[in-house]
Amino acid sequence: MSDTAVILAAGRGTRLAGSGDAETFSKPLMAVGGKTMLERCIAGCRAGGARRIVVVTGFRHQLIEAEVARLNRGDLETVFNPAWSKSNGMSVYAVRDHVDVPFALMMSDHVFEPSILADLLALEPAAGTVTLAIDRKIAEVFDLDDATKVLVEGDKIVQIHKQLATYNAVDCGLFLCTPAVFPALGEVVARRGDTTLSEGLEIIGARGQFLPFDIGDRWWQDVDTPEMLEQASAQLAKRGL
Image 1 (spheres, rainbow, N blue to C red):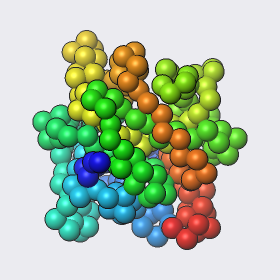
Image 2: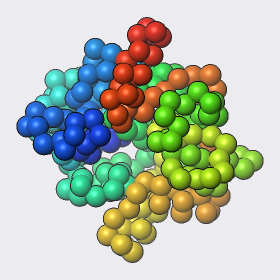
Image 3: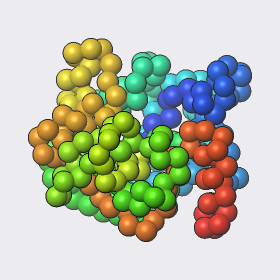
């Protein structure tokens, strides 16, 4: 069982704020259902059993750091990703010297039922593995075109990409990682100076160590566009979250 969580909150989030140049704009600080996205994510981590929560910052990091300070109960810390303008895998790679135990990984722009994270954190991951929360309710996914698709064969994830033509699940943006994810990402960084999270996970998958965790009937929502924000707010109100 793990009690460590890493939240990625480094990106610009341009689809929710045009160019993202407004001086006060920060996507993780946008309100969804009456709370900032980051506040909801931190609350979900706490409800799921996380006792150490690392928030990776980048774009307008001072604003994120101020929100972390407001919410801190002695369980929060920040790590700045100097390569925040590159791909999202660089934000995971930024914590390689800060986390040496299995950890939950999530994006600050995803909202989810906390029980999903609680069940992920309760797992005992085998060395070298990464486990991804997946949603098989494909017909119910809001804005499926934007979702990251996943192909599961047996008890393994064999492909993950937004443009997959053949898939049977969708990535919920919640992971249980072992520290093996860092050298996998490092392989890609060494080759081209950048890495998406999916590229690192493809390396894990090639070893047969990328595993699915089915969320069943539970709910989650990515928040990348104004339409997604409206949908998430409506669902949170409907579910009393």
